[in-house]
Length: 102
Image (cartoon, rainbow, N blue to C red; front, side, top):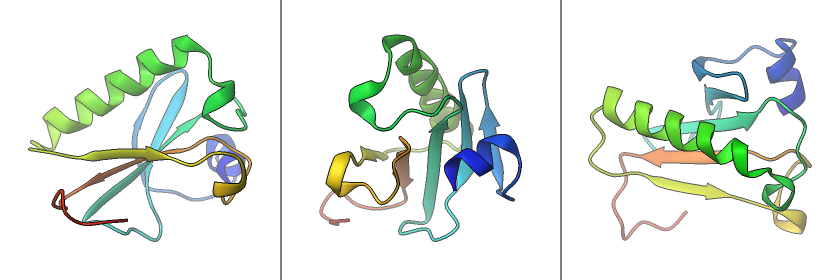
C-alpha cells in the first residue's frame, strides 16, 4: 500500500512532500492528528534507513510542528514482526496527552 501511495496509484491526503519522503494523513487515525511519513524509496524498516533520510524526516516533522502550531507530538515506527507491512513508515501523532498509550 505505501509503495502505491508513493507512486500515486493509491489516493491519499498529502500533507507535505520532499524528494525523499511523502507525508499523508492516516486513513484510520488513532489520534486527532495522525500523519504517516513514508520514504519514497522502498525501505523495509528503520534498520535499513540511510542517515540522509533522517534529515528529511527531521525537516518535515519540524515544518509540520510549526505550521500546525503543535505543542507536542509523538513519533513512532514499527519494524520486523511488529510491522503490518514490509515498508518503513513513521507515525506522527498529535493532539494526545503523554499518559495515553497507543
